[in-house]
Length: 356
Ligand code: DAH
Image 1: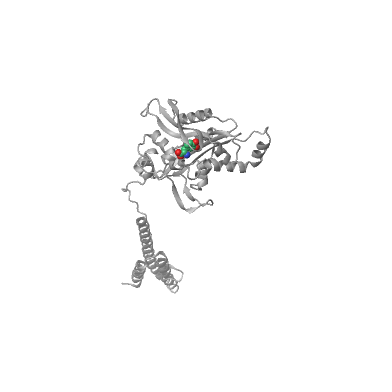
Image 2: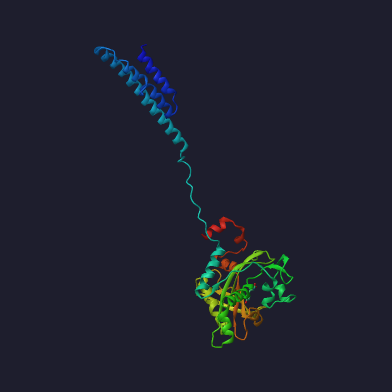
């Protein structure tokens, strides 16, 4: 084997050993670079005769081309290998089933709450939010239901192990009615100047109080139609001339809008609540559909008791009006035909996803 064949073999072996592009370029420099072996051989021809140069030059060129070919082949092989690694890393299994995005949605009771808020907002009611851990005064006493009053037994209340300022433990509010007094206080504070002016100047119209207060409520109660945590929405409208007639109009309008039917009648059934006098349960009856003909209780209501108006800081001689408290859980059951309240709180997606 002549020296040129040996050189080509050495180059091939060196290239084959280069496993990264940078190594390969270093190897290339050793053979084809400015100080490389082929260049050296070319320079070495200076002393040769013209004929010798021709044949020697041709032989060196053949060797050079062979080395270049080997270099290119190795370059290609390295690039292929690199691509291979990349493809393997990014491999897609096109036989896998597609991943779809699961859409979330509102809980049916939240839908009802939003519906209630939208309907009453459209009638000019404010929407207020309040604490679920309440003082005894707000939950009971301010609502004309003082300690030891028999009406307290209407609610089986949860108590918290912390005493309020009055020395009576805080409670988990058993209804949203405490928001009546809280909201009135907030309004009087917020619009103090107008309320004060209305008190002293008979020409100043007293600002009305018109609000709903939706939220969570708690009682020691648990069966198919009662849950220890449930929802209520309180309503209150006080002004100079707000009467039971207004309650009937507002609540009838609400029910018809909520259930999307005019084929529905209301009944005000005399009842007792400490915070209203007179008081009434509101029953509704659908005239058609699956629930037709049955009276269904949906709310408690009444004309706000003067003692409650007084506890709000307002003059019961001037302020009169109505209040109501309804159960959004029950409204949701009626609207969707659900017969077990517990389904709402089990968190079972097979049930909940039907409302999306
Ligand atoms: N708070 C009452 C309850 O939980 C419901 C209620 C009745 C609210 C009459 C009222 C009302 O505002 O006037 O049973």
